[in-house]
Structures are given as structure tokens and as C-alpha cells.
Length: 342
Image 1 (cartoon, one colour):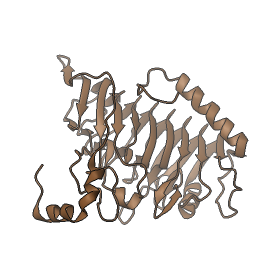
Image 2: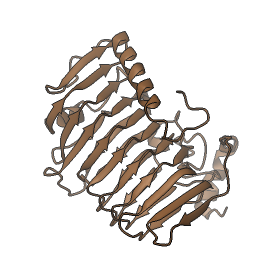
Image 3: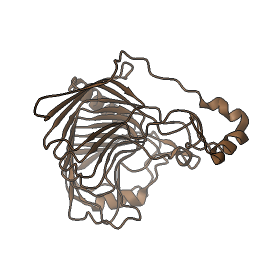
């Protein structure tokens, strides 16, 4: 690896911190990667281990199916295993692969399966670990994409939807241990999240344009039959998580049905965002809001509109565990990691 002078000097200054640069891989039965397609170019099969090499799928014919059920990808955003204020995630000698799978200019693509294993640090502070990354990136002219049966863990963002990915459908995807957003839709695109399990994420679905001049207020995002559990990670020196949906005043409207949102930390942040989320709900029915900690809910926590029932403590934890087991049992077609907790 080549380092410029500035990077070399920064490395030289940290001395013993170089001991942090070693990491461990994942043992699994994997094969060398290869691609196959049919004579018409409307079906692509990905097989084997792609490692730290990015797989870019670009300019596929409309309605192409990409079968990745036997493909294995690695996402890594940090050049060292324990980024901190001195040794940031952009410094070090660890290999990185911030965007292992990219769908670009693939209208109405149907991406099926795939395992994305992350090496994103989970125990370091959010600010020091923030080297932008996503397990699956959908961009440019990839309109009306369907992502089905994806298994991803230990990513920065799980799935990121950018310009022109409107009309998206995320179906039967299992994302876990997500350091930032399970789904980032900061372009405020309309679409649907159906029958998904997001288990342990700092933020569930981001619909926040930040400082960008965007307006998705006339769009609609539907969340149906999905389970979203927040998990606390270190951020600004404290173990916290954000809201299950991060919304702003210009975010799409929300239709939430037969879904479960679970809060795991009594120190949850993002109350203002959560309040805006509930304000963007246009339809809600058959949902559960679970407060998993033993501590009492803070009185300032914004509560959802009609269409949510509330459980706390043991009742909430039992409900989540049962719902999670049922989802996993009902989705044997979703790829597994050998050490998944079932």
C-alpha cells in the first residue's frame, strides 16, 4: 500500500497504536467468485467469495434478475480495527471495501440473496468510525429496484438508495448489527419495505436530507410486516441509539402496517426526529412499539399515533424474541452466516 507524506507522518506519530491494525476474518466454506449470464442478458448469477473487490453491476437490461444467493461479499470502512481521535478510520493498513455491491443504471433490477459480512468496528465511537460506506449501494438510473432476501451484518449503512432509485422495494431482507442506518433513503424517494428484519441498528430508516435542498413530502414510504430493533452503540462518549425512522419536515409520508419497532436503550437520542416521524405518518394499523429496557420510558419520549400498541420490560422482550424467531423460521431462503444466532 502506498501512503502519501501526510498519512505517513500521522502513522509515524502514533507508534504503539499500530498494534491495533490487525484483524480477524470470517471462516466459511466459500469459493472463488464468478459471474454467469444467460444468452439474453436478463439473468446474472453471482457465485463465490468476492472479498474486498467491489462488484459493480452497471447498464443491465431492464428487469434483469441478479441471483446472488451463493455470493459472499465483504464490506470494510476502516483502515484500522479501533479508530479513535488520533487514529481515525481513514488511517492504517487494513484493506477497505466501502461499497462492495453497487447497482448503477439498472432499471427494475431484481437483486436476490447475497451475504455481506462487515468488518466495520462496532465498539468504537460513532464519530471516529464514520468513514462513509454501505453494504449495497443503489444509484443513478436504477429505478424501481427490488432487493430481496439479502443478508447483511456489521455494516455502516446496510442498504443505501440514492438518486433515481425511486419506486424501490426491499423485501425479506435480514440486516443486523448495523452501525448507522439499516436503510438510508436521504434522497427522500418513495418505495416500500416489506417483510424485513432489521435486528440491532443505530438507526432504522433514514429519511433525512440534512442540508441538501430536497423535498420528498409528496412521496410515500410504506413499511409493512417488518421488525426493526434499535441497538445502542458508542456515540459522543455514551451508549445510545437513534430513532427507528429519522424524518424531517420534508420527508416522505409514511404508511406503517403490521410492523414492530423496538427501543433498546433508555438513553435514546433523536426525540425531535421521532416526533417528526410520527407527524409524517399518514396511515398506521396493527403495529407494536416495544420498550425493551427495565428502566421506565422517559416522559418526553414522543409516542406514536393510533395504530400502535405498547409493551414494556419483560413483555416487550418476550414479544420481540418470539417475533424474531418466527421471522427467521419463516424465511429459510434467506442466506445465513455459519454463526448466525437463530
